[in-house]
Length: 459
Ligand code: GH3
Ligand code: MG
Image 1 (cartoon, helix red, strand yellow):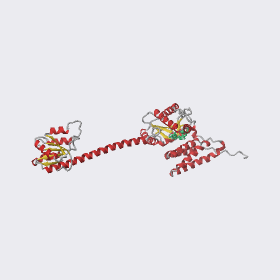
Image 2 (cartoon, rainbow, N blue to C red):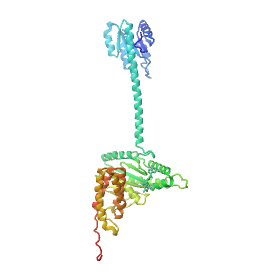
Image 3 (cartoon, rainbow, N blue to C red):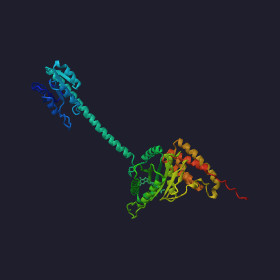
Image 4 (spheres, protein in one colour):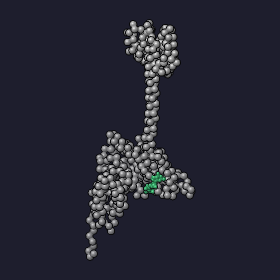
């Protein structure tokens, strides 16, 4: 008879060599079971590797243990069950009816089953068979668990890598806009707790379209990579984050940084761009790269300054740097009330104060200015309405038109804010648009427009 068709190795622990020989004969006659013998607890420990620091599980599937009087079989059971690499090996005890007390102790020490002496052959094979079956199922389950753990670990590694890749820009390897947005929000909240200043630099490569047009896209890509490399070199503090904002625009987030720190970094970036060496082109030219930079710093304690208003202020400063002739930085400090004010020591030194002065429109059109201002108020209402309908295209066109006309009417702030609204609409950034509308509205309210000059007599 075969023990339930299961195979395995049984360790027979018994001080009687006759008993061991009997077990060996009965079990091995099945052709599926191998028997190892131990005549004492000590011999069993040696086979099981108890005290072996390597702790590899021995090739034993079942322990057949005689509750031999005079030895400490119970203690042996306890020790086996307390040893991590042996704990899954089932123990089948063999006891005489008279040993019922010892049997109870053996079960509480971890034995799984028992057979009575004298041993009945059928019963022995049946019990050994079901315990070997149990052991093989336990081993299979453990192996599956181990495999699952391995798969889980691999998945976690893959997820981590995906998270890392999804937060990076593919071309340049710096953070992408998504990560910048998340980090900006997080750092702003953290900064609000610590009540410190935060700075943000926005920079854009000058006349980048021309590089692409004249030297090809591959050269353009190489310049983008070099500018990203420059950012990596210059931006060194662990909390700082350099990111590609999109196209040829990059951003640097500088938590816990005052405006002076942003200025130093902006100057390094301008100087570093001049040092960039783009490979010599087929026509023998070596393109020179310049950057326009807008930087803003805001103190978290300011209300209603927000992460978005910091972004909008840096964006507007960047636009001023472009308009001021490129290859320069404009640095502004977001003041209480949210209106940015230029840092007097900024590299460009352009005044931001003219925003509060009356418009200096050409005399020829000065009588049109009040109507122009009214139309901008209508723009504000229309943009608010378009926002409700998520109609960013209408907003983008309004921003574009403001950008194109404000300066002609002597209202450079309208041009600046129009540019920011245009970009924000293209990016679908609702908060930036709202922040610009608030600033535009405050600006329009602050204007004191002189009445149009009366027509000269006799006309
Ligand atoms: P400005 O000085 O006013 O910034 O002029 P610009 O020509 O740089 O104008 P703008 O910043 O609007 O141009 C961005 C250009 O960047 C447009 C697009 O052709 C180019 N561009 C955007 N993404 C990539 C890119 O991944 N690789 C390359 N080679 N060019 C790109
Ligand atoms: Mg550009």
